[in-house]
Length: 406
Image (cartoon, rainbow, N blue to C red; front, side, top):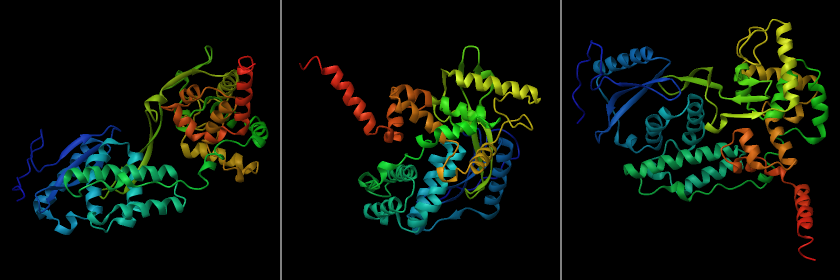
């Protein structure tokens, strides 16, 4: 039986039973949870509320709590208790969402809504079988869904079913036997990430004539920074005398959700790098030093005062991701490069590709790019290891063993 409702308290202090709980997530957002009902087995049904500060969430929690007192607890039918959508959504809201950043949460909710629940949401959890899950993933691969998205959906479902086994909803985790089939052309993935060798010289020649893009593209191409890292880069993290640059922060998207878990609004703040390995310091090439010195002089001559290295030139504030992308898109259109699929990440990929083409140690490349493992770098840029590299390796071995085998 559900517990008896207690009258809400008017005084401040610790919230009592049935009055909801409020806590701050790792990404800085505030989150509140209110018990709005009980299932037939006595398990609570909770509603999650999000906000930018504690006061905002507390107000919404109080309103929801008063609504529960006025209308009573809701009940869930036995059928809903076994519904795959209901169970996985509850698991995500309670165990996953509070521990991830808002942009990641928005992406995962989109996967649930537009992929997983769209195809299997109406089913009883017992009917979400290995065969059905395998067909689901086969279809995603065949339709061309990005491999990264497919893997993220696989991990979501694998973790959910591990939880479902512990709770007794199912006897075993069907995701343990699901196999993600590789596309026949998967070996070509990533070939278009970097600028093609045939056009590199021409593109960089055009870049040199663009006052604003020149220092940005040179910095991208010779440091491997992520766009979010470049946007958040401040002059205090750059030492042109010692030729050192430190990456300590990055642009972060902050997403707000409504009571139903849908995206209500989004914004941007300065936060941590994508991964702990993203915090790094390294020596920058002379070309970058010269480009940044020239950019600093341009800013001084045009009264652009900002803590950011590459600010909005009109306001001096932080440049937006969309603004930087628009600047690049105008450059692409001006020079007829639309078919080259150039993005802000293209120059980061070119950085890694050029280093690997020159046979730089993958561990060094991974460290410069902020990758946790060298294997990550090699998996992304496996296409760089082409026949030419193998031929060079063969010549190296011939030279090294020539005297031994005489």
